[in-house]
Image 1 (cartoon, rainbow, N blue to C red):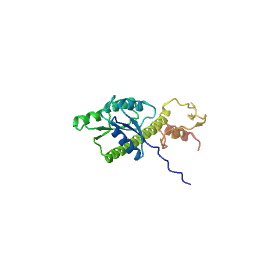
Image 2 (cartoon, one colour):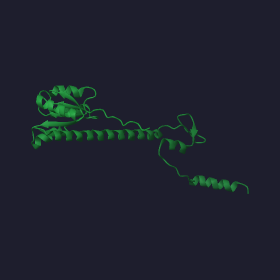
Image 3 (cartoon, rainbow, N blue to C red):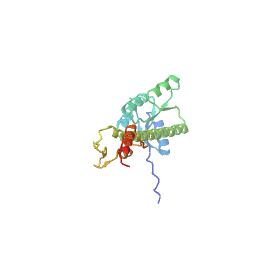
Length: 211
């Protein structure tokens, strides 16, 4: 019996807009597209939302707001959570190259010009979701790599080895051959041969044995 597909929880979207009409329009649109809107009427309220535990992963933020403006909000959010930054879309009537560069440099990931097109805003939100998914997958791969490196580093510590038979004692207090221990703690493979010293001793021993 196959398991049921995992249902993804609704993604929170911060809607920070001081104009009441625009705010309600964005809120209704975001909710209709399957997101969970978290509404702020100004920059100060938006910052409180972003400072709280489990903040929204996406943000639609007006550039010009009372209190904290959009670019400053983006910069603060990235400085506060550099490991898990939110994906911010700036809403702005500014269309000059200098202004857009300043907004992106502050930490915004994208922008939509006012008056905004709903289809364009939806598409840019979807880009944000894909970007966050890729970041989460990359973070997961990094954790897996760190765990693998941690296992390899186990071989760099002190190894309890018998001074006579050269076997190694593992964590369960079992003694085993060196190659068996290394195989269990790394991906190393072994080929077997005879070193010159052992070859010479083996030859001497063979000559000493009676026919």
